[in-house]
Image 1 (cartoon, rainbow, N blue to C red):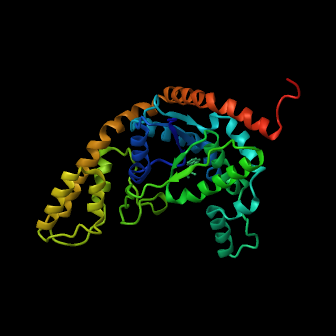
Image 2 (tube, protein in one colour; image 1 turned 30 degrees about the horizontal axis):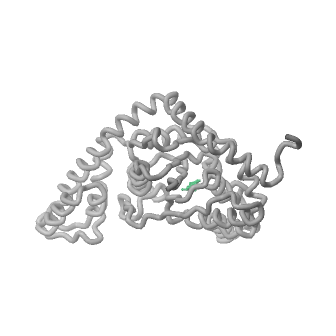
Image 3 (cartoon, rainbow, N blue to C red; image 1 turned 45 degrees about the horizontal axis):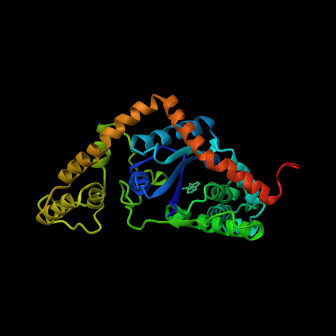
Length: 337
Ligand code: TRP
């Protein structure tokens, strides 16, 4: 049987935090070890230009995100790890797909609609104020990322499901008109992956400023963990695990046995400070080695670049001939052979 292709893009904005780690990076790295699939992981740096127009930040974030995935153990030999912007076939395919994409479909994209809504709420006379074509066409670029490699399965967060539906729509339309060239991909939203709460109990997110950066120094990690919200129960009081932010945090990093033990200690009564100290030790033990590796990698951008360049070469073994076929399918091919 032919192996399935699994592909996912990683936006290169900002510095990854613990929530990104447990919600996306950790499961993706585990999945990349699956021998039964071909996996593609790439840095969606063209996508980052939609949100960020600061060249130094765009550049730094590409470096940090690449180093993060490598430090956490992504197998860059087994899976194809590359930068979107190193694959010139992707923007080319984006244009070809743009010409087969209904504008009305893009009008319905959540991100675009939210931006329009915000303008309306602010009483702006122009509903498209501040909205670039990049934001508007974002889903077409994402469709090109996916269709370029005929991915079957695309692991994404819930907020990306609509983009996958759009990708299928675009692919279907193309296939209908020009022949069966593209695989229709499926989104894979893993319901079991943890959504980590932030320090204040809401979902860990940059926008709430309640996050713990992935590779903060040990001391700071401890300090941040000590800030996780708890109630004012005294140490000896028996405690509820259900709905307890601290317990959920612990569960995300602990083994099933450790979780069970902690559950019993909650029932018997345990001080919040003690739980936090143990949580810190647990998280720190898991991150100490990658943190060290990250520090080394970030000092060696040349090496990271080499890995990405090699990845792009591997990816282009597929994308170059495939794009030639797509060009020919739409009528762009040498005038004589
Ligand atoms: N839009 C995705 C996100 O914000 C990132 C992304 C870009 C992506 N291209 C992709 C994800 C292709 C999956 C497949 O998370």
